[in-house]
Image (cartoon, rainbow, N blue to C red; front, side, top):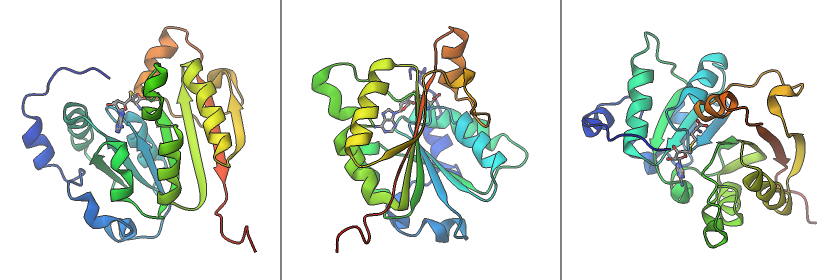
Length: 219
Ligand code: SAH
């Protein structure tokens, strides 16, 4: 996502109540921060945050954490959300590169959303894709029991790649659509990129994958 530099981004980040700067402190203890034991869903690469915000408003008994690596982009998300009259208390944001995700969470995440992730088309960059084996191994460490990943993209190559890596990492697919907006999935919340690509008539690919905990598998 390209965005012009936001001039006062440092002040926006430093004064935000939504943004958790010292996220390492909450590793394994996010339920304490939210002050409840509700499930925690995260979006990695949330962009300007409209998907995660809409989810937080629609599902108050789930906690949502939006993760984004660029200051300027997260500053825009903060401005938008903190401008609301009622800021949802089930939402937090992290400024972090996903490669550091195991510093932030331990066995406490119930679902990961990967929406319109950077495709990294060159083969030599494939490990940077958020559905690469190395990322999937990290997600194994942060998930609680049942692991759920939902992917949306308009990029066919990234989608095909993700079907293979996710399947090879022990997940089963609960749902796959090659044209989400003409499917029977009705509770879809559109992301910023999804709106943009849909206006261009691109089809949206979608998958929902599940893996049960390893516990009890070998005896
Ligand atoms: N999910 C949003 C934005 C998609 S663009 C939407 O669907 O509208 C992809 C976003 O992921 C960008 O904002 C980019 O900065 C962020 N991103 C890419 N790699 C990342 C990483 N390793 N860690 C965290 N965020 C990342």
